[in-house]
Amino acid sequence: ILGETGQDLWDCIYPKNEKGQAMYNPSGKYVVKLHVMGSWRAVEVDDRMPVVDGACILPRTKDKAELWPIIMTKALYKAISLP
Image (cartoon, rainbow, N blue to C red; front, side, top):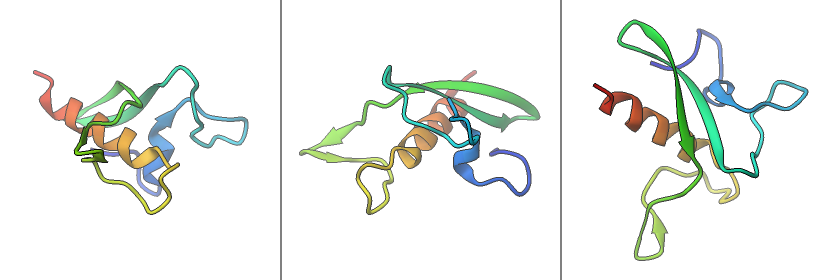
């Protein structure tokens, strides 16, 4: 369901900087390229985080500034819920 063989997970997240790395988007909008049900799909998500009792309920790293795990998780949830 994720990017091509040999890619890191965050390589599927856009926009990218001049080095080809996923970068912060001030608009809060991201596109994640996923392979779902035999087809490549561009899934658009935002960087808003669902919280319960002040804590984000999606996977995160120890570095709270890293958005890629949240962006990737939101895209996966959205992709598997599409008809």
